[in-house]
Amino acid sequence: MVILRLPRIGLFKKPILGRSFMALALVCALVARVEAQQLSRADALTEGEVVARALRRTPLSDAIEGEVAIEEGRGRAASAYPNPEFSYMREQTFGTFGTRENYVSLTQTIDLGNRRGLHGEAGEARANAARNNGEVARLSVAADARLRFYEALFRQDRVAALAGWIVRIDAALSIVTRREQRGDAATYDRRRLERERAVANGRLETERAALERAQARLSALLGAGAPLPVVTGALLPDADPAALPTLRASSSSRPELRALDLRIDAAARDRTAASRWWVPDVRLEGGWKGIDLGREGRTDGFLLGASLSVPLWDQSSGLARVAEGEAQAARGRRALLESELDAELGGARAESVRLRRAAAEFREQTTAASGDLVRIASAGYEGGELGLLELLDAYRGSADDALTAHDMAHAARRARIELNRMTGVP
Image (tube, rainbow, N blue to C red; front, side, top):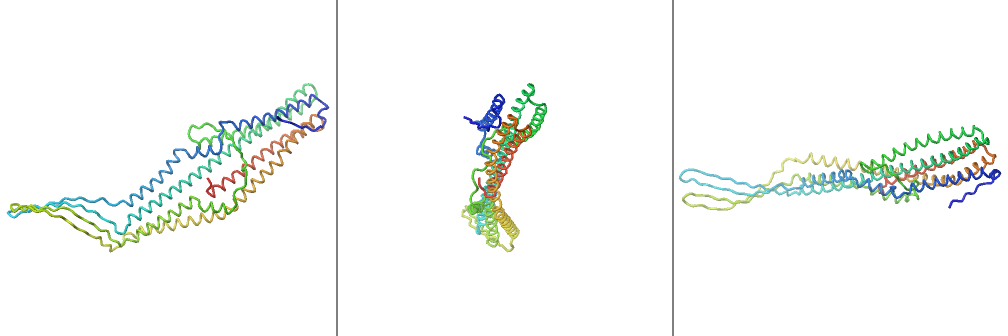
């Protein structure tokens, strides 16, 4: 139930006009209520639903899992042992004392320095780094989804505010037109209201175009074929962010930093493997030997052998240099990222807090005041104590207050999303 209290500023000197503006106020309240119902429809998307749908997209999963599979495959390839070698050889001599000899053997090379194992461990570390990079990509997609969601919500709220402004103008224009026909109002009032409506409608159409653009961008993130979505939620964050020490602790465990740590570890393992260039590989061989002595019969035996490579020259110096360069680059990127996050985190939190509090304070101060000014101006105009310009100023001021409140809430929300992105909050 809606209860309206109108000040007595000559309003009830003209009962018909008083009832007209009472109807105007009721129409405005009804429009606001319908708009609120539209934004809370069952088919409207919430922030959580938008983020979940954006993250469930198959191309995103394919891109992330593909990068992990690449690093896993490289690690397995680097750690794989060479296959054993099977060989057969026959030696034969001719003549009275000719012989025929057959050799069957199996040879396997063994890595005594465990270089392949170290390269495999490095590959596993890089695969885990790729998983963390995938988490970075997911966080980025989630942040982008939130930005697009709140952009659409912001445009919806602005459209609703401008539509409410036009409803007020239309109601006043209808009353003034009837009064003009009876000779109770000047043609100037009607023409002035028509001009105001044209201005408001132009702004509304511009905002509707921006809303369609925001909805299209959001629909593109949700997947091909998704209809233009209607969203619902609160534009202004409901509370200040966590304290700075908590944010710093969260920031220190960002997936980008974990990925860089893992790449440093992988490079260190590759460097260790390269430093073992002097450890030889052993080649073991075993098999069967058969000799056919002709008339004297035949004899069978076995083959055993072992050989070592002679590491006179360091053939891993290039790989060692690559590993050192990778570790150095990863350490540098990590230090730069950590320093940047540490320096910007305090400012980002301060901005988020200030914008949220300013938006909440502005909305609290202007909501009631704007409504009072509209009611006072409406009653004063009908009572003949205020002119049309004062009425239009009240209408325009109420709309501008609502639009400014939405602008400030949107700025606060964007600052919060950026802060969450910096701290790695999903």
